[in-house]
Image (cartoon, rainbow, N blue to C red; front, side, top):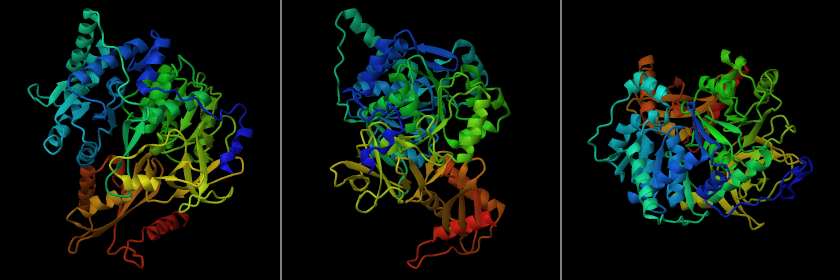
Length: 577
């Protein structure tokens, strides 16, 4: 059924097969540089970098990592926002065969500790405002070196002065005598100096591939059914396959710009807005602060050819008065992912951008970090309401019986399973979870069991129905109620807790916590505020409940578990009443 690719008949020229180069990500990037060295390769806060300038920085960074002893297969944590340092360090690590562990810099200390421990990382590249967090973690983990970057590192002279006089004053200074710390600029100078010495000697070291494209190159984190996120091992081959697919179906060409506000520590931002753009000869417009206002300002100023975001962002943009000032005449593609895009939001956004000059529509995609980011996308001009689109080139998606993997007839609800060149290698140090997620089916293929429930029509369009596991998308970020419940129940005032996702006008979905307090504790605003503060200390901000309801008891199943589905039904009934 799905393996016959029914959608091909609808999509004229749809590429069934892809030629994925035998190359690492660095090699793909270097090839792109060789083809257009003097073209713009990156735009950051008004400053342009040519492809050659960017490669020069990458090579210097790679030389510095090597000089300080980083070896192939070593793990290095990159805990950075969307700044040039992140792009440079990412490709530098790939060049020397090390693994880039991409983490959210605002993760809780317990999460960051987990990331360091599970990967065995000894180095972290981060920003000065996060220095104290990682300094403290160095006393609890294998971490022994911090490379400290700063937001002004790549700002122009005027903006650098402005930053130091405003936001820069609010950042605590990093001690100059801390042996743990290497300044980014000094670190990069070390690498550049080594390259210059080799060039002066007349015998520069030739590049040799340190690892294969099939080796682990990137580790991204996505939550699981336990209280800590899983590390997802991805390869150069995975990212290159995504880039080839995006180039084949998007129409992206050299010289195009891509507004890169989606974070580099997320597969959506890293895979689509950075790597796919650069290897296609396009250039990312890096935006370090994720907000609707910043997004709109960059749309007005730079008029990018391609934009991408989560539904919450598009909703917030349309609610901003500045949005009407944006012209979309040069827009060649707009993509939504990370959460379900409602038909109403798509319709309103399409109407808005069309009235402001757009000739394209917002295209919805489906994917998950375990396949880099996207495995299905709405075909251009062939959108079907409430559909997530059709599988991307090289990818297969089927609706299957979760237990047996047997493909189900069109229109039948089952588990969405994915196969193709972007599938992860597995979960870091978790063979049981890997075996559960990646299974060989009767056709001899390895299929990823997504845990998502959906259906497919006879033309191959996919429709999302829900999630098998208790995972909630908040502003496009995956959060896991079990993790939040465990944090709440660690508080001395809490006896039991249950957390569910509820509709939210701004975030699409937010978290609501139902809490049973310990005997003798009375519900109050002060108690609620204490629990919120406790959550903020332990969790990333999207995992902090926005609503609390105190109860004397929670509904239970026959086997003694909290019946969270009963609470979900209660909330649904409230909405319908």
